[in-house]
Image 1: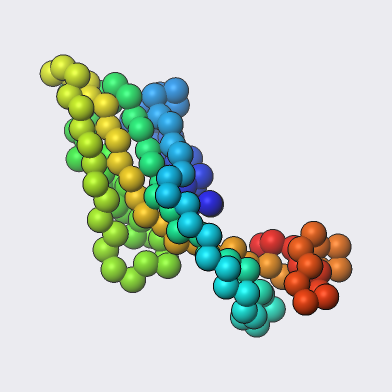
Image 2: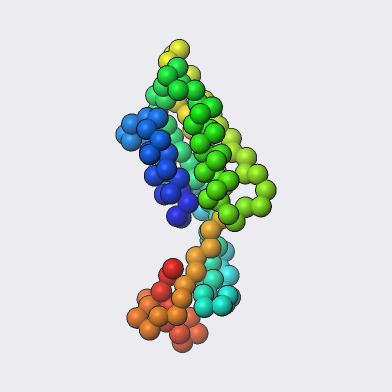
Length: 133
């Protein structure tokens, strides 16, 4: 679940809100075993999940939420290389007052977990030891 962590970190670098205003969590995690070799790597499984983000008291009067959504969209286009089509995401906005709102959005991700042969690796597949990459 690297993408949720990477996007979470990226959003914090934007300095649009304080770190304590944002939480993220994984929802609807599905693991699909996919044991197959790909060159030096072995694909072990695929993770499909919804990365849920919650931003409390977003100061939309100071910086429009559109700026935040544009940053997220740009990040997805540059970093979600497993997706060939635009990746829409729904947003729930709870307007608290003229200045602030709570934002909640979920983004679907698919990630492969792969491994490389390693004599000290913790994963044993068909008699060969692998380390996750």
